[in-house]
Length: 68
Image (tube, rainbow, N blue to C red; front, top):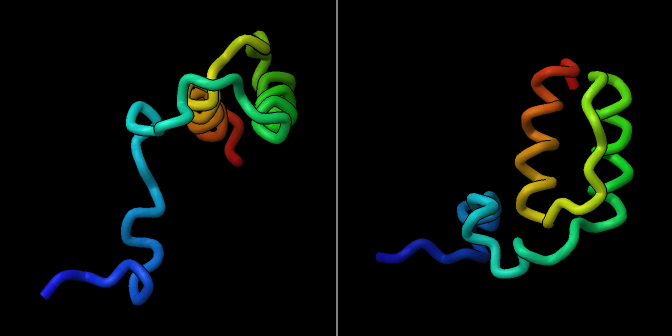
């Protein structure tokens, strides 16, 4: 019996950013805003040229560093 995604909606909700279909597109406005905040809190330089996937990975790294 196969898992029905409707009965387990979070089963595939988290994908590796490298597997995202739109991962090579520019980061979203929400990502940019949050990433800029994290960069300010951690003293990191903000890079506005990141892709969606790269921004997601950077956000994960900085969240660990900033205790968020």
